[in-house]
Image 1 (cartoon, rainbow, N blue to C red):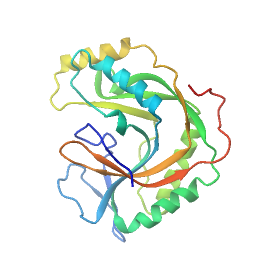
Image 2: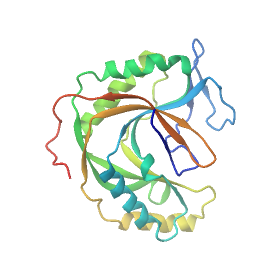
Image 3: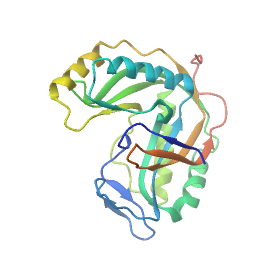
Image 4: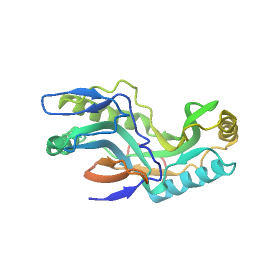
Length: 238
């Protein structure tokens, strides 16, 4: 299984409430809890990014960080496009999740995506999460995420309450960051030009484990599912 470490101290894919999955005992757990079930894995589903895309995103991070922005940046090697966060999941479900993902996307064509711009959640006036936008075959991406969502709900996961908003997390504001520093970061984000139109072919969906460590999360690929068919876009790969 592949492993890679994020430079962040916190998982950029945190969703509240976290679904803590147990056989016959489905309940929501506090994501701030310091204890976890030793027989559970913190899981999410994502599509990987090629080196050219990570390089473009790293360049954007460099430009944004020149003013000493109070941000914990995501390591480029750990960047990916999240499709569904699963949370703490009983390990007995692992033999079910991978095959369920494969079945839900069987025959689904690969498609092309591209980088667009940099923005922030909840907005650039209060940039708590800095992210890069995704363009290209976003409708195909949304349908893929929808198929995975329905498949996960069918095997017992709680439905995702938030609408799917595709983005690539670049970093998160540090705890206690001064508002003036965040405002300067917001100004920098708004002044940043469009990202280079780097395009890539999304043709894999991965089930990943996130292990929270003092030095940042370690991601382990548990299953890899490949899309098939012709790309659903006429974007030219960079």
